[in-house]
Length: 346
Image 1: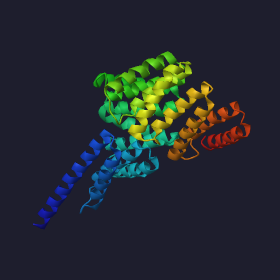
Image 2 (image 1 turned 180 degrees about the vertical axis):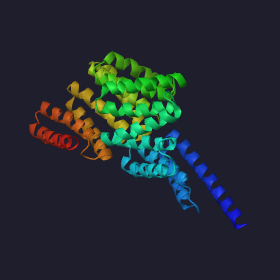
Image 3 (image 1 turned 45 degrees about the horizontal axis):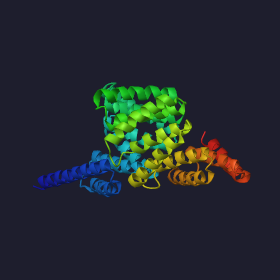
Image 4 (image 1 turned 60 degrees about the horizontal axis):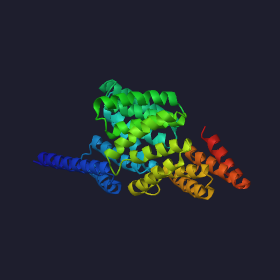
């Protein structure tokens, strides 16, 4: 009788945990991160405090909680959760042929990529890709996801040929299995557009970013960062081409959407502020540009700390603005900071 009672209790806890995890997933997809965070913490507590804790349940709860922190750019809080999830999954599953391991690898790699910890991110992306290809074959959507993550990593490092190749492979898979207006297809299109933009291939960049914008706007989702990404992409292209009157309303729309959907201190907003600052800078509107550079810098430092390459990128632009406005000493101070960051992160 006691054994049956224990089994019933375990079954009830498992059902409750499943309900909580499903609720987290729904709230996450809706962009209700704060609400999802509360439920995810409750799920993890339940998973860890059951009479006979199931490591697989704990790993899943850790992963979900990490996803929520990562979605809010809270990477220092996401990292240990993903590490614990990965360690559990590797200990209870054969790491070379289990998709749950690949999922944790991909998530942890995404954190490292966002933090510019590229050497740490690349082998994790590659392991995730290898596991998924081995189990699912070369043209599965999960494989495309790993390719997309690796392509993003290479793009951030300026390895554009490798990034383009991976994104094209990911796009081919997405277009084979998803509707032409699916958000994941839009994300890959935007990624290709940004790669072409970085190489000065503006006509190709505009074509891909415009296709992406059509998708994300027609499949409107208040938690989809693709809306901001595609508007910023097009704004950057138009700014580089001197099409300032076309660029500004895109940045303003992206800023309004980003602040409402993700908060005023989000990385989505940071990118828009930087793009708008460059737009004003190039038109000689230095006071407006300076304020936006500083807002973008403050967000970047808050998320990544003061010694991240993303910080150095904004410092370079701000120091150039100071020189253009005759503030040589202020420019030199920023240039020294930039040199320290770049030397320490090589």
